[in-house]
Figure 1 (tube, rainbow, N blue to C red):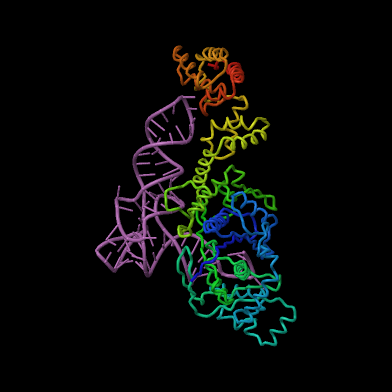
Figure 2 (figure 1 turned 90 degrees about the horizontal axis):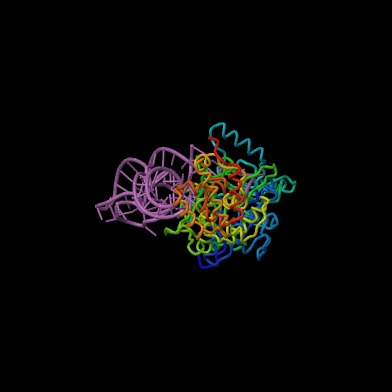
Length: 513
RNA sequence: GCUCGAUUCGUCUAACGGUUAGGACAAGAGAUUCUCAAUCUCUAAAUAGGAGUUCGAUUCUCCUAUCGAGUACCA
């Protein structure tokens, strides 16, 4: 069917709030597909619902995409040959097309008020049925199909509100193809006459605006969430009604992202409930509520993207770590799975740890320098990078870098009680004092020379290595964990090491008993 | 309710009619280490159920169950 034409995809969010990770994944798959095919990626803002518009959401969406490394070829900031890319700025376009459908007999005017329809719905419900505005009932409702032409004309001229509804064909099988789900058939008798355009706000609904814009913008592939699958037949029929079937895009409906626990799709509130981010970036609502974001929690965008890419797609190999370029290289819609994927935070953390470990000391050092500065500690990037080098394989999140290195920049203020009980024995205090003198006699402390020298001294004097090392660690750091203690002493230097040992000897002295 | 979709270890998934059903995260055990991590090794863990089709079904068909989505003058 499809002649070879330029691949053009669009990510078309509506600015009703921050983009959650499901939306980011949809954008990502669009982006990967476009780049893989050497095509174009468009961002179109679908703000045709004036009621649900949220200020700031649009900027949030663009900032989030940017953070993720998803670049756009056309969009509201980038511009492009099909500008504007904000549907509210394309208002004039849609009426023309809606009218075209009325003229061709594929749509009609309807004058029923929202209240009337609500009442009908309630009534049907109370009888255990459901109301739908379809071929069976449209003849008995107020529209240009049932009313005399004169009456229709009069109503249109009176200024009363009207909508344009699609005239769904009766009892016809719509044959559709989805790149992920394969062939789907549905009979139109189960479908209703959807509203395409509303005179009240002179705005189209999603269905009309979507089809018109995809056509005008020459979109070749529509990659969107599974929640759109039920309206696919309508969209097929709209393309047909417009006479655009020859350039109709191909469709791919992505599986949903599920809650980490329990049932249902991931929702915006799950983040607060389970204590993990559902948004790429932190979000502050108008009501003053804050939702945490991956960026602020200390995730690297590359790790976040890698994790998301593998949630519902796989490369067919056992490779798990992918750079964006590698994702672009391997991505294909055929390998997208059909069933919903449950989001798993442990895996997200694992990915991040891998990426931190593979980041350069310089990059991480720069991050750490800023964190230290915020903590009132001034240091150089080089010094921070040297500290990071000692601990980066133990960090899971970027923000772990600070607690993992803080003791290298700041003497302990207290000593962990359990460690004191375990490693600061009364009988060893004398030895620690001697150890201090040993250090004092050295030119400098280094892992290469000091460690073997001191260990030999400990062995010669019957000082158990474990107690010596850990007691020293406790004196210098205040805790009994972390990387090689001699590496830390080397890092902080001889003077600082001596000062900390003096402080420990003074404060800890002899244990009470 | 109706329509559509989905169903492999706890989780993400591989195996596109023939495998001891593979990998990863998480879990458990061990090794290593001055400590804590990391690392390495090992273990446990799955085809929702039932009928077919077939020499042979995770894979194809049907039924059931479960889950999900949609059912707005929202997207």
